[in-house]
Image 1: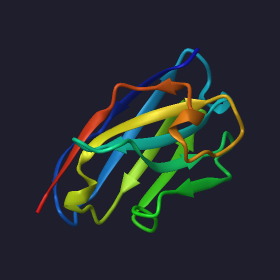
Image 2: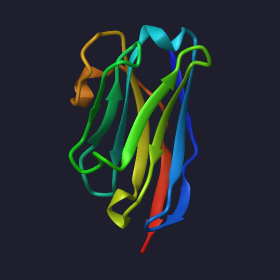
Image 3: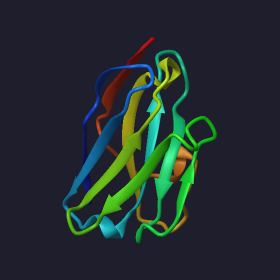
Length: 124
């Protein structure tokens, strides 16, 4: 079983950047398809981005495409989410998720393993 720990959240002004990190432990990260989701207060959990086990395939939510980049360093067991041109509507708790399957899935039900989340707040 894998444990996921997110870090890198914080407060940033609109137009700024943040880089989130998800560290995996327990099993090597290359065993898992990985994703980022987010949830704002009073809203449903939203797909942000996902990446295949090798890192060769990525998928993005429509609201972040072109601004966010997901990547991974399997040798370090780390997954990243680079977030640029942040907007107030990006404010949410961001969660790292993992799946042993091969589908780069947009559905939260496709992921069995979840971190505790890291808060991102974008001020206008």
